[in-house]
Image (cartoon, rainbow, N blue to C red):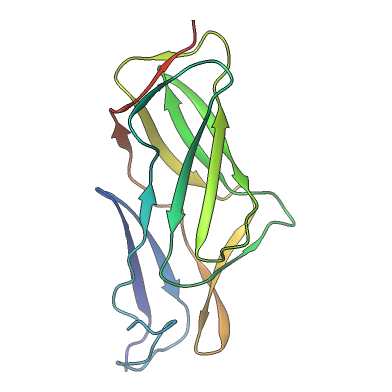
Amino acid sequence: MLSASTVFLLLMPLIFTSCQVKEAAPVGDLISHHTPVTNKFTISTPTAHTYIVGETVTFILNFPFDVEIDNTAGDPLLELDIGGISHNAALVPQANLKQLHFSYVITPGEEDIDGIEILELFLNGSTLKFNYMGSLMDCDATTISRNLYSGLKVSAL
């Protein structure tokens, strides 16, 4: 028996977050058909492109299990660095419970010649939950590493 089990979720590449299972979990139990040792998710990025005014850049977090969002206190945001300035990509509602879509519209005056960087997944008062043995468990998605996407440039001057 484990006293607590941590499920690490790895983003592609080198970005990660974790879900903490807060109850004891016997070895071999499943979280949405995965053992409670490791669950991976990835970030789908748009094709390499230089964005101009009015274009939307969208990042998709793909989970191997259904994620439920409680956003009564606020929506999660994906913090981006565009040209050294922090911007928030907003959560875009969609039907696929295994994905979170975050979009940002490029505005006049923005420029980033080395690429857009993901800074953090900011929960903003929301909670992310997953089904563990029939119970919804909180997912701690606050520990995400920075990652530069050099193919996603911005030229909106």
